Length: 114
Length: 112
Image (cartoon, rainbow over all chains, first blue to last red; front, top):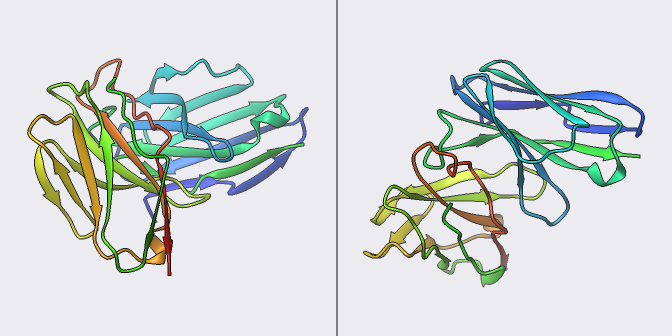
């Protein structure tokens, strides 16, 4: 238990569906992150929020839409995805947005697009 | 952002000490060195962090030479459960180059 909870753990969706991934942290952290990890590949940073403000969009396609309503919650809204978007999506949080802070990761959502 | 280089994979046996070295030749003065461990289908987990010399915790030791251009993660007496991918990250205070970015990591396989 890392203090970062992601739901759902598994998701299968069609290319025309709309779904959302949820991340919640109870650590009092101010920075939250979305990462994508495709099979046997490194983690790719997608989005960063610092004090609810988006500070990074790593050239992510618009079919992925993040939302951070408060410092404890982070969502990733998905629509019209492609099969190549199938991956493990990981949420993380840290006290602040900096490389020298410890990041805590959730268990991830395994997404399959059919 | 300091670039890191690690071996792609390593093999060892239970009970052995494993040392994974990471090169970071362009490390900046304010940069820290952080190591994470990732098991399959799970998020990475922080192992250890250091700035210089040696850091030790209940899981591992981190050795950093005086020039800080490399670092070595040392795992004492590994077990099968230490089979995982280990990532070396280098970065410092908040800036446009301080995103928590992961490289390819080192895939460590432990055999009985």
